[in-house]
Amino acid sequence: MRTLMIAACLLAASTMASAQEITLRVMTFNIRYGTAPDGDNAWSKRKDIVVKCIKKYDPDIMGMQECLAMQADYLAENLPGYRWIGIGRDQNGKGEMTAVFYKADTLVPMETLHFWLSEKPEQPGSKSWDTACTRMATRVKFHHPHTGRFFVYANTHMDHKSEAARQNGIAVIESHLAPYAGDLPVILTGDFNSSAGKSTAYDFAMGKGFKDSWMEAPEKKGPTITISDFKAPKPGADDRIDWILYRGGVQALQCETVTYNEDGRYPTDHFPVFGVLRLP
Image 1 (tube, one colour):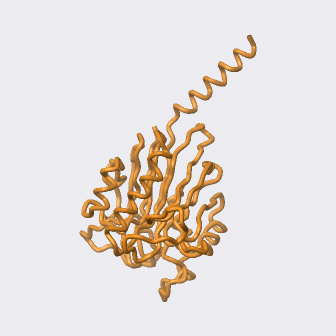
Image 2 (cartoon, helix red, strand yellow):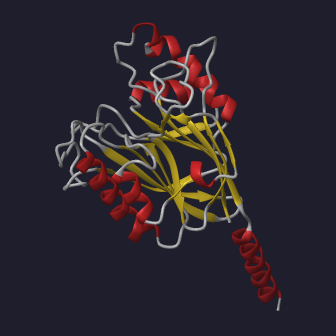
Image 3 (cartoon, one colour):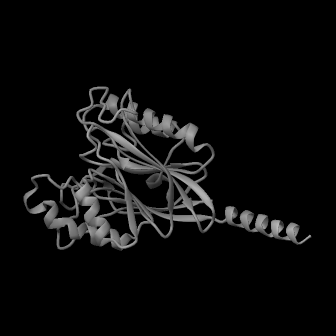
């Protein structure tokens, strides 16, 4: 009888945990590779602005693009509580990463996969479809200990020249999400180098069941452009190439194009995008 009662209590606790909603603070952040010859906007002169921007928005999970290992290490050292996952896109494992930062006391990575946006996604450094650069994605299955729930997160950086590479890249990501995630919630962040609502790559992603946080969130803030070139946004500009997408029952509560700066000095040449998502 005692054993049955314990089992019933455990089952009830598990059911209550799985029924709890998860509210996640999510960010996508192209931080501009740290060896770029950017003069006054070089990494050494803006790295602390990046740290302060992240601290202000306090994301639970964050996808970075153009992130080098030395940048990831610096951020981890100066952002207590965060850990990161990533590998360089080049064949030797070096170069830019689609790094994933997460709060270690909130989320636990269970499975990680790095793959390349090519006809041979398992081959490091592989390229296809006239892509100008090697492109990749990082996929992580996360456990949320407080509720016992799981979700899948992916982060990517699409090619800046080849439309075919962008559309096929989304197809590669989809092939690594659909059978793997099953019914789990999915969040996809990245610099897609495609204008939201005005590109075939965006239409293709929406056709795969993804929703755009900016379009869906009842609370929005900031400009409709995510390319900054280290400058303030121009009034009326409309070119969102950095997205927070989701599917699988997820709801967007807030979305913001982040224009954080310190006396006109911006953290990077993109405006990060911040969102609050509910996993019901």
